[in-house]
Image (tube, rainbow over all chains, first blue to last red; front, side, top):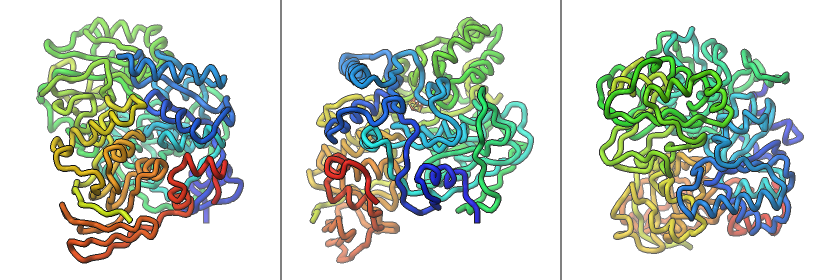
Amino acid sequence: MGLTITEKILSKHAGREVKAGELCIVSVDGCMATDTTAPLAIKSFKEMGGVSLHDKNKFHLIIDHAAPAPNERIANLHQLMREFADEQGANLFDIGSGICHQVMVDNRKVKPGDVFIGADSHTPTCGALNAFACGVGSTDLAAIMLTGKIWLKVPHTIKVKLNGTLPMNISGKDLALFVCKHLTISGATYQAVEYDGSAVQQLNLSQRMALCNMSAELGAKTGLVNPIGLKLPYSFSPVFADEKATYSKIIDLNVGNLKPQLAIPDSPDDVHEVMQFNGTKITYAFLGSCTNGRLDDLKTAAKILKGKHIAKGVRLVIAPASRQVLMDALADGTIQTLIAAGGTIINSGCGPCVGTHEGVPGDGEVVISSANRNFKGRMGNPNAKIYLGSPETVAMSALYGCITAP
Amino acid sequence: MIYGSTHIYGDNIDTDRIIAGKYTKTLDISSLATHVMEDLDPSFHKKFVKGDIIVAGDNFGCGSSREQAPMALKAVGVSCVISKFFARIFFRNAINIGLPVLEIPGHDIQEGDVLEIYFEQGKVFNKTKSKTYNATQLSGVMMNIVKEGGLVNYLKKYKTYQI
Ligand code: SF4
């Protein structure tokens, strides 16, 4: 009998060996809340009788979902976060820092082997770093702020093996969409997903993050990648699954001949080949989000758009995932290329992904987006249609004014 | 005991449709009630009576971690949500804020059925169909959180988690 990566990490943090199905209380190495979830978490923390944080160095506040504030109501919530951070001496990443998940990685707030909990459903993004990263709501987070711990049921693990040599035009996002199609939007509910296989080993950190990010769309508690091939800018001891670990399911998918993937409205698991929708007119393209707003995503788009201009009647909105990404993309000329091609750069943060500000689509508009969700109303207007694809697909579609396979 | 009439929704009702992201940035919980289910069912407010029960298929509450989703349902007066199974963050959030939620795999509850719910026992009696359902048992920690009326009260009392 062996242990999965999840069982190993949770056992270490529970102080005893735990297996799938068991309840345990684990210590938390890091946690975070955003401007959507922090105000409620702070309120609950105070209602619980919280006076000071269990460990101020392990708690991070990020203002990313509606930043800078679009109205006075949200401005006041941001103030509340700033005041709380000041009062507690906690880390605050203010407007322009970027999307919480990216900010945590850029600033090395999550590391291999950690238990990391975020009050944001896409927290599994950080599973790419070989950590157990899991999303919760505000009150669960408040409990961690107070106690430094969380209770969890150790999840069973589904192993998803992606085999083959990745074709040139296929990215981590295409793999994520392909997995969504196979597992469906509820296919990993209450479970962990471990990604493995030769195709995954070829992925860099950014692509691994895109893959783990959409574990949230499978309903998973967390998503992790076999750390073989993982390169980080510091040394670390990887946590591998035991060879005899028990999985609830092992899924083998061959991706050697995979074609670019597209989720069509209104669900991230309604996935088809982009080609089948070639020619569908779009007016709005969004490049960004915690799935695909990283440097290599922007570079990929810039490569496609270099020396060209997006189609007439199309808006291309670009939100770099973090300040670091923005600075790197400025330094190498990526941003200049995207602007010259007609793109509009907005503040590093969630941008229009969640429909609060900075680019809400109009009635009847068709959007191609590099984000992770296309539920009805997701971008702020239930009368717009959202297609999800890779940065390549978004750039090609912006260029031609219609959905176009890279 | 919870007693009420049911409104049926399908599979995979996501948190964006329970309460859209644009309304979530607030601590004014009553404003959430105004917009609950807006994109999913524009007639919701016309037919919903305080104390009614929401019954769904698979995976109710999938999507975002926003606790505003169960809060909005609680604020509008939903007395209980029944689903074949819930998305995990929604499920935890609902228990944490004291909104009764029950998983009944394979239920056949229909629109307008009148239910009598014994939440802590996990028993649901469908008066319309004269039929009893057993809900999936909550884990020990969750049951204790329920008994205290939510996680805030639980931690006020115990200071830390107990298993
Ligand atoms: S970019 Fe979108 S999906 Fe990611 S954290 Fe922000 S709102 Fe959520």
